[in-house]
Image 1 (cartoon, rainbow, N blue to C red):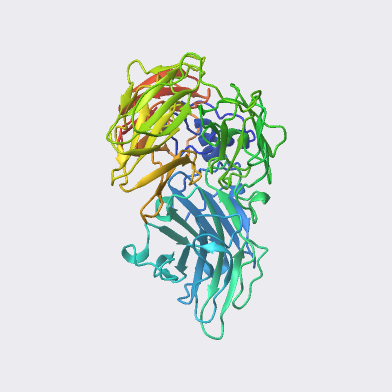
Image 2 (cartoon, one colour):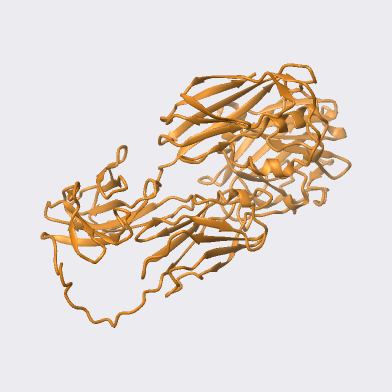
Length: 600
């Protein structure tokens, strides 16, 4: 592939916004790779940088203009990141001094909170002789480089011992690379060494710990005040899936996106079955991050509600469901941390529920005319839901005394008959059942709580109401379980389980792990291509599990300025579905599977 001419320079932010989250994708969600055009703009032209800017740690300052932020005392700092590393640099006179008592330090918080000094970590910095700074957030990592170049070190905060330590990795280096050239120092820290965060809070400085000359200087952000034992009062927040420039003013003292109002309000009753659902946030939302996996609406009786998303204002999201709610149905809404602010900061997970209105009825009950009863057994619980996806409410009955669970199909008028192909499943001492879309395929699966020391069982719906044991986790736990409830407990968009137990046993919380974790990286060679020069792009992708991934798509935009473009692939089978941009459907990826696409 040859660079025949350089494309015109243009504003990058809209392009970058579409690439947010490219380093991680989930089952059924397309992987959108940052376009080749952006790589050319970022590496060939001396322009604004794309976030996701890969650096070579060699002492050459190849940070871009919009990755530069001022520090105190005429210092300059730099920040950027790619799918693998977090990079930072500093340019300041003392960097070249070779002093064994001076350090470049960076405090890092990998789980940013709306209240920055909450969550894991500590707001008390590392002690250097008699200096112990206060921090504006709870840091869980502390980088330090000694100016005589004798070591580079990363400390992590140990919550159990309430102390800074580096004893969990050999030498405490965590895979860091650092290179100093004159007054410039650049550093890369593997994101995996920081726990693969999606966002960070950071604040940095240079300090002298020698007695009689102690001071903290070269602080960033520059709104901090240097001096002896100086506290950090301000910080930068970076969303690492963001296309926002690292030096954007909005990154100063930012926090995670937060829901401030909902419609309907939490626990509202008698909400019209045709209502829209909306949430208002404390600032503008990145509309490209909104989907059914980040703004999720589920019905107790109908699983996932899809529909049309709109944005009544820049700080609000609204879903107009394709289908009406069932009368009396409890609707759960979950905002996950995959929904981003316009500066890339993730949302604080938030959930609420309301109840759809039922109309008519007087509260007087009489036997159903044609099906006054059905089934027979030691039944302990029943759940209603549209099991076979035909629009009416079917029934799933849990039974004890060694009897199987039974599936009853509604004909639309309230007459029930046994499911044609799966009238029953399982066998045990079942005490409770909950319906929900456990495997995120759009239908109602079943989770059954059992007593007598028997494990809870997971049953997967094929979409027609036929149930089979979950392939990889057919059961979990064991105890005297009498009730189970499904909901997004950990704010990641899927349905977790909370089980109530009897006979003095504690309640148990079970986290759903039904998502694949897909990583995607792209490398350009050479990194700086000139007109007329050949260039090669290598796309590498892997499924790290814990589940297999299906419905995966990879897309790469190749600009018209490149000629003689072709590609080869290895690993997983891919099928080309488009040429501009290049798009491939990827065969189902088992855990550990992946492949490489080479564009030349």
